[in-house]
Amino acid sequence: MLDVSEEVRAEIGDEEADRLLGGDNAPGTYDCTSCRTPGNSERERTSTVLFVGEETAVLAFAHASCIPSQVVPVSEEQLQGAVRSITGGDGQQPQPDSDLPLQAELGVTSGLLLVGGEVQPSLVVEPLVPIARPGTTGPVDVFLELLSEQGFSTITALDQVPERLPGWSVLLVMGKLHAVLQPNANGGAPVAWWQAHQPMQVADEWRSAVNKSGRVLVFAAPVGTIGQQPREDLLREAMDRAAAAGKLVGAAMPLAGT
Image (tube, rainbow, N blue to C red; front, side, top):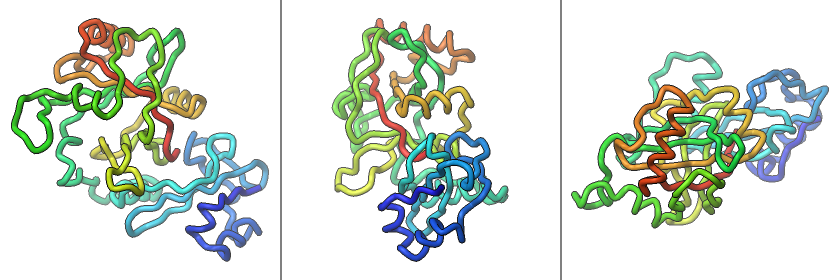
């Protein structure tokens, strides 16, 4: 009862794909790479999910009801981190890429927020320092301006879901938050706009909501606008104030990976 998509077959080859479908290399029981609950490829439809890095590829399995069979491009660091989480290795945590300094300056909070009358899985992004335009030293804090240029919508009130931002997505690997991906200016696979220093644990309820909706609402505000709020109701209040002050942008993004 294994599903192997054409893109996965193209990556692993016909011989390996046929062995999987024939049951030779089927996983039997497994932990779903999406919802992290047990699965059984002999009793329920199961998707093959291939995580592909620069030098390494890892084949994982998921309930077909959670995600379809697919290829998920990830950085080598992300993939090695996922392997360590599976094997329980004690390797060093991945470090942020040196050519992505902006990513190290962003704080990201996950939460379930009431938006448009429904509870929505959301990420709230706030820089830890003022953000200048790349290649310049000022004027500082053009964070919202930069995001508006990328297509983020100005949020004046959390009364409706923001529009989907084409080409952007939120990457979960093995049920943990790894990155927010943006289109590659040179074409090809998406690149990380924000990347976690190490895979970020999210609440089971948040992950379940994402798996159900297939999307994440990503909101952003300038440094010092929202802060680290200990509860989701306080986070929502801070976001309402930011929206009323014209200091909040947002976009809906599909789920990439698991």
